[in-house]
Image (cartoon, rainbow, N blue to C red; front, side, top):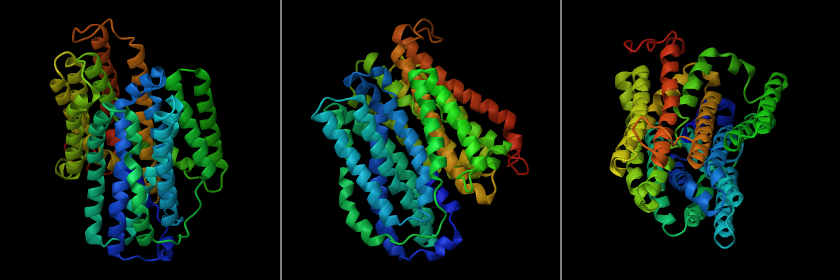
Length: 483
C-alpha cells in the first residue's frame, strides 16, 4: 500500500532538521492536512479505477496484450516516489514539494484526458499520463504524514494517521464504483477526477512551512539504478523478452556494486546481509503478489461470462473494498488482541480461502464471486498491520525509515509483477482445458487464474511457518501460542 512508505519520513527524520524547521501551529497543520488528504484520495481513486478497467482500456486502444502495463508501470513509479518523497520531506520545502506534486497531478490529468479523448487513444499516452498522475498525487500523501508528525499536537496525531489509513481504503472502494460508472460513458473521464485539487493550492501554500531542514541529500543515482532495474523486471513479465530480464539483472549488479562504493547510498549493503529482514520482506512479496489481480479477473468474468457492463460489475466488487477498509481500520485492534503471528496466519488464511472459493464460483453467480472477494480483501486489509511490524522488527531503530520505504516498494513491485503475470494469462488464455471445478473454456481459465494467485499465498504461508521463529527471534512472537 502506498501509505506505508510515507511513514519512512517519521523514522528517518534528522533531529537537527526538525529543529531547523519553521514552526506552524497545530491549527494551521489541520487546515493543511484536510486538502492534502482529499488530494491523495482523489489520486488513489484514479489508481483503483484504472486497476479495475485496464483490460477494457487496453482493448479500446488496440493493445490488449500490453494492458497490464497501465497498472504495472504507475505502480512501480508509486513505490519508488513513495520512498523518494519520504526522504525529500526531510530537507526540501514542503510548499515546493506540494507545488511540484499538484502541478504533475494536474498535468497528467489534462494530458491523459485530452490525448485520449480528442485524439486517437494510445496505450502509451494512457501509461504516460498515469505515471505523471501517480508521481504527482503521491506528494500529497507524503507531505500529509510529514506535517502530521512534525506539527500536530500528540493528541491529534493518532486520529489523523487513522483518518489517512481509512481514507486510502475507502478511496479504493469509491474508485471501483467511479470506474464502473465512468466506463459506461467514457473511461477517459477517469483522468479528470483529480483536477479539482488545483483549488486547494492557495490554502496549502498559506498553511505549509516554506523553509527546508538540513537533512542529507537524496541518493539520486541509487534510486535511478534500483528503479530502472525494477521497471525492466516488470516489463519482462509483460513482454517475456529475455533481453529485458538481462538488463534488469545487469542493473541490479551495478546497483550492488554502487552501494558498496558510494559514500552515502540510500540503502547500505548491511541491509541485504540481514537474513531476518530478507525472510520478512519475502512475505510481503508473496502475500501481495496477487494484490492487484482480483478485481480485473472479476471484471473480465462479469463481462465475458455474465455479460454485465462494467458499471454493474463495480456494484458487486466494491463491497470487497469496503470490507478491506473495515478490516484495515480494525487491524491494529485485532492484532493487539491475538498477536502478529496469529494475525498473519489469519490474514493469509483469509486470502487463500477467498481465492480458492472464487475459483469454484466463476460459474455460480456474481454474488458468490463478490462474497469470495470480500473474504480475500478482508485478509488483505488485516495483513497490513502485522506484516509491517514484522518487517520493521527485524531492523534497528536507525534503519526503520529505509525499512518502511523498502516495504512499500516491495508491496508495489510485487503487485505490479503479479498483475503483469495475471494480465498476460488473461489475454492468452492458456488454461482452458482443465479445471478443478469442472469448468471449461474461458471459465476454466479464469478459475485457474484464481488458483495461480493462490499459489503465491500458499508460498507465503509456508515461508512464514518455516521462518517465523527466526523472524521473531528474541520476541514474544516466536510461537503462535506465545503472545
